[in-house]
Length: 137
Image 1 (cartoon, rainbow, N blue to C red):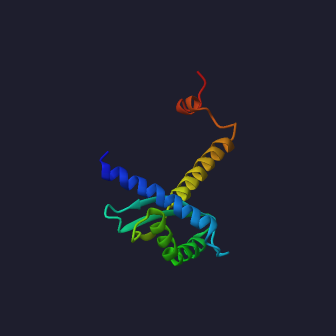
Image 2 (cartoon, rainbow, N blue to C red):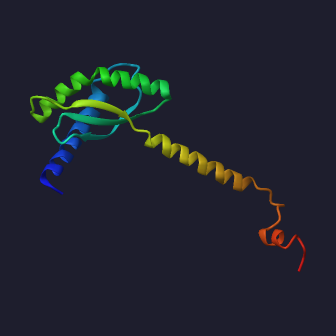
């Protein structure tokens, strides 16, 4: 790992920590859902940072949360600049992280499959009888 790559990784981790704390403690909007900052990817020149987040709720809740986060971005950038001791903090680009949704959907499909197998009637012919046309040997 190069030194600059290691530096960016540290910056990402620090920004993630700062933003997580701000969302938890400083953003007072009652419409804000249960938000988790799941990751930060900062450009090499530190001009932009893609902030990945997840939120409990439906699409409408995601949109409200995204609007609130974007609205608070100026305050967040100011706090990041102060904490990192830089003149200008990266522009924050909020990106919804759907990995939890995908994991939940996979779990639902697996559960449905398990239920379908468990619901199979015990009177069904075993596979080897079905292959032999149901005849006894």
